[in-house]
Image 1 (cartoon, rainbow, N blue to C red):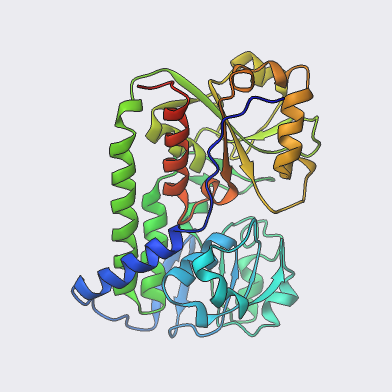
Image 2: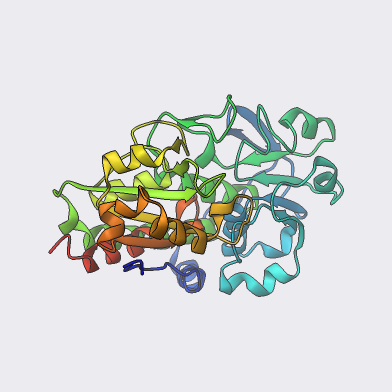
Length: 348
């Protein structure tokens, strides 16, 4: 039997905590100046002009959708797409009233068919230079403004194929910029500042808790998925969200490439033999290794993977996919992995 000690980050409480913090913060924060329209933003190398506070939004990307929900803008979202897992429980009710265009990639026709006055996207992969939904110019042609999260374009090159290359380490400051720009777009800057303050406080608290982890040469790898269960693994690159979490923990990522999710062979992983192996759990079923049970079974039976120190010693952490993506759950992932590492006895 695979000796696994894991801490599974569950997405049940973070939204409620954020919502409560938002309500509390709203009463204490000095009112900010309202948005003057038209509003012009520089967004992922393009100029976006917002003529009015949007009322019909299509959101492509779970993290972006949940940020809008956290800002109390669920009534503005008419449709969503690209879901990696269930919506956070505090948003379940509002999400029930939002049409889902696709679990994965929506078509351009499906998006514009909702008659949106704003389309937001989590990734340039969907709307960008090589957008599989469409390029920005196509939306310009039907006079629909597009906002793409800066978490996916600042310090990141998406001009090639695949998930892009991060040239700079991800930072939650990009997430906070994303939230503040939504505050300006929808004229809810007070709510945005309250949400940012709440998230910053949690991140600072998490950093204090893991301060004792700094200074140890602890190596780590995060396995997202694999196209084939026995094939090469998509591991977290050196500059993405998981790498940011590892850096906050003082852990060394065994992957040094700037690719967002490089494919790495198990012989190479074994040669680097990480102290801790983080596995991603998701509802998506695009690839065989999206299934967490398939991942665990592979680690138990594969002649190479089963010999990893992390596998033999039960130093496996399971986190929800949301913790690996730019969004409200980054701090949850940090807290969960820190708790697991402390439980493994690697740090005293």
